[in-house]
Structure formats: C-alpha cells, structure tokens
Image (cartoon, rainbow, N blue to C red; front, side, top):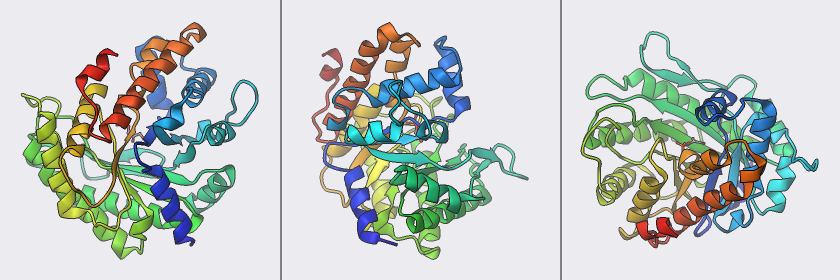
Length: 339
Ligand code: 13P
C-alpha cells in the first residue's frame, strides 16, 4: 500500500476552495429524477446528462473530482473520448461508487445494510486501471425518535464500510466513508446529533479494528439537522454548532478531510450551512462538500433533456459550484443567489 500516494489524493480531494461533484446516482435513482422532470429514462440520456456535467467550462476552479457510477465510467463523450479522459483533461480526479445499494436488513424492519463486498477486490483493481483514484460506499441509517437505528443496523453498516475501506486502500484508491443518517422523519436535531455521534463512533471503531489507515480516507457524513418533518427548521448557525460539536467528539484529527453529503437539503440551505461552519473558528480537518442533489439542481430542471438548454444548465451548475466554493471560505451569502 502506498500511503503517501493515497494521502496525496485525499488532500487533493479537499484542496482549498474545492469539493466533489457527486454524479453517481444508480440507474434507478437517476431514472426517477429524470422522470420527475419529463426526461426519457434511457442509457443515452443518462450519458448525455453526465457529459453535460463533465464538460461544464471552468468546473475545476471549484471542483476537485467527480464520483461516477459503473455505467458512466465505461461511457464516452459524443466525440468518442472516454469520460475518464474527459475528467482528467479537465483537471478532475475520478472517483467511483462501488457499493451495490442498500438492501433490506433481515429481521430489522425499516432498516438496510449496504451490499457490494462480493468480488470487490477485483472490481477495485479494474477501476484503478480505468483511472479511478478514489471510491465511495454509502451506509444508510434510518432514524426515529426512539427505536431506530437498532444497534444491529449501525454495527453491520460500520463493519461493511471498514471492509470496503481496507480493500480500497490495498487497491490504491482513497475510500470515501459515507455513513448517512437520513433526514426523513420528524426527529429533532438533538436526536440526529445523538445518532450521528453513535454511528460515527461505531464506524471509527471498525476502521481502527480492521486496520484502515486514517490518514488515507475521506469522511462523508450528514450535517446534523432536524428531520424534514420537524418544524421549525434549524438556522445555519444551529446546524454548524451541532455538526461541529458532533464531529469534534468523534473524528480523529488524523483524518485528512470531511466532505458533507447534502441529503435532501436545498442548494441554498446546504451552501448556507457549510458557510456557517467556516465562520465558526478552528477545526482539525478541512471541511468541504460532496454534493449530488444540492449541486445538480436546478441544472437538471433547466436542461430537461434538451440540447438547446445545455449552456444554461451548465451555467446553473457552475453557479452552485461557486456558491459552495465561496462557502468554504465563509464568503457565501444569500445575495450570491441573486447574481
Ligand atoms: P446527495 O448530496 O444528493 O445527498 O448525494 C450524496 C451522495 O452520496 C452522492 O454521492
């Protein structure tokens, strides 16, 4: 294992002012998003959307890398150049989602365990050969006021994340460790914090137990927010305080970077909350973003599957990328949304 190379990749992922563009929706999720705005759900339309994202002019000024999915890493731009080359030529690191999805956890109604460990060593080797330098695996944790998550759900997902992470490091890929505590439900922010702390504790316990090198991972957590059905909404400062308190309690300083998922927050909320964390003072790790929805929308709505809308959609994508980049310096404000 070349720890220096892995650490250098992790540091490049969280380079100053930059975050990740996640474009690794499974075909099912991508199709659902296409259907909601009337875009045909075909391989070619998914390819065209990913080409639009990857060829956005100036993307690498705010984005360090992209997370692809198996279908996309094997595709090419309309001119024939493989997407991996398109990304590399644009100055973007290539990442790949390698889990095969969250499946119902036996004997635990309402909970899931993420699968994809079978054959993972071989798949990672071939993704590395294709040019990938980091990978992503998402464990999903449902939460309610009392019962969920069960200790079993937390334990199996933490165990799988660590199994995946050791295989990634062996293959020369930086593992993004993503244990997502969902926003669905009416739980309070305090409950989200309690669960997020417990889940992250369990994840780090497994990472250490299984020999993962902490200097060569990136953590992708949820922000600590109340459930979507809980009112009133948290202010950006409340989210920043609770999130940083949670992370400081659990995440070792050896971790080279923390890149948040957006999880169903609006683009404006995600940028505002990220910004608040950057006007809060010192912390041991760089904080950044690895957003899918909060950066791809509203570009997807504007594109609507029509070539004539490509430039306007790319402009909208760049706008969200710039807002998030500004947030990493504490320079985002809602006034930016009017520009
Ligand atoms: P969202 O930012 O839409 O929650 O997606 C996160 C993710 O895991 C994609 O890689």
